[in-house]
Image 1: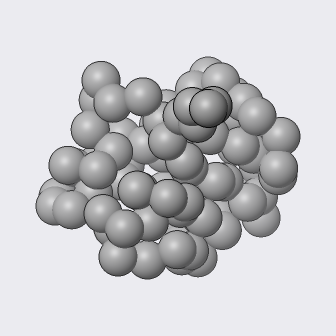
Image 2 (image 1 turned 135 degrees about the vertical axis):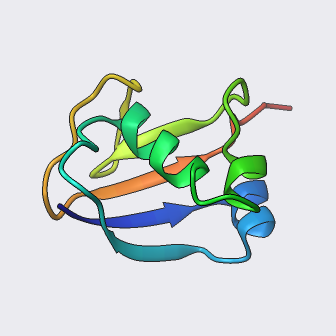
Length: 85
């Protein structure tokens, strides 16, 4: 499955990139699977996207939960929670 990943704010800074086009193996089916796949790449991925860190995701510009299933060709955006002021 091919995906377009986008990273915002502190995630972009921590990873040193704002977007990446990737192909993932068939066992990567959900947002949670994708995050685990990216963490398995090692640093800086494992540090920036570590389990327990609050990270929001959007699939094709719609907010989704970790259990949401991915679609081939989808855009997946990762960003830290936003606080108001």
